[in-house]
Length: 415
Picture: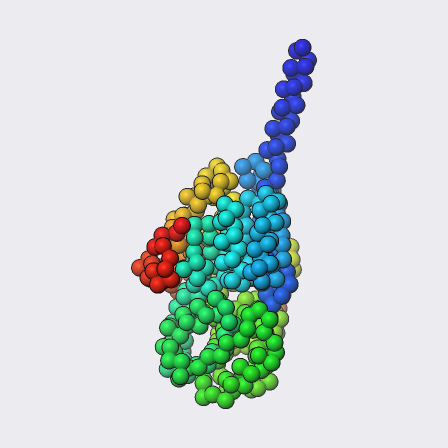
């Protein structure tokens, strides 16, 4: 009998250990195909590096992390199905996306499953604005924050210019154009015209038509409110039409992969914004950020982009919140995240409590000349940081956020 009792005790002990060691699944809903696939690949790389580092440190609550991923192809309908599949696998939280329409749709479906959703590249104001809810957290800045730093720089260097907008016809494009118009005093649509192009699925003919209209205008600044491969295609047509020579090209949100796809020669002199570049840790004197740059470059033989940094940061922030809350419960994690201030890859950041927007410094950047880029060992020193805006100056206030929610008929607190 004593032997049986001992055997049962050992079996229970082994079972508990096995249960404790069961991996925690994190679900990555990202574009492996489509116009934003390069940004999606960077997210995968950043997430895997973070997971490997955390597992080497003992995991989260004594359990290792594992990544399960699904291709959303930057299509909301597909992303929603992915959320259902990842939830059925037992994912503890979900993150990803390079399209704001995907992030918004995915976040709403994740909330129905009681799961947190962290947006990686989702710059639309709507993500944490009129479409915000308790289960959505946005790691990157919003369109208004991009427009504030970009408008600040353009006001100093190119005041009182005529603009022509070519804009992706969905939530990110709409709110990015609207925000940039406000900060550059180009709200008069007659003086500063705009052409919308479909998203997703725009054809080369759509860009050709839009940019031909830009060429026929008297604009001095061409604002390409496009992203990923869509921006690359438009830049090639703009080059053929001679627009890169006679206009200043502005793209509200740039990434490393966009410049890589187009080539620094084509993108030279384009002005935009980034929430993070691999040069930021040195600028902000962040030892942890520099370690990330070094580790990522060693592993992948390339510098990390803002997309990679966002996914990496999300995994670490979720893991840190789980440890502080001693729980994987979404409700406990919401409490742990709201109002939490931290430093990871740059200067101080904060998960703002009233809208779950990550408050952080944003940067205006300009693509360097090709000769300057090629001086770097990895040939990826693409951006000159030309301006910055501190977090407390960049983000919309509570009053502005509530006004937006009120106009949209939404509650004045996250539900």
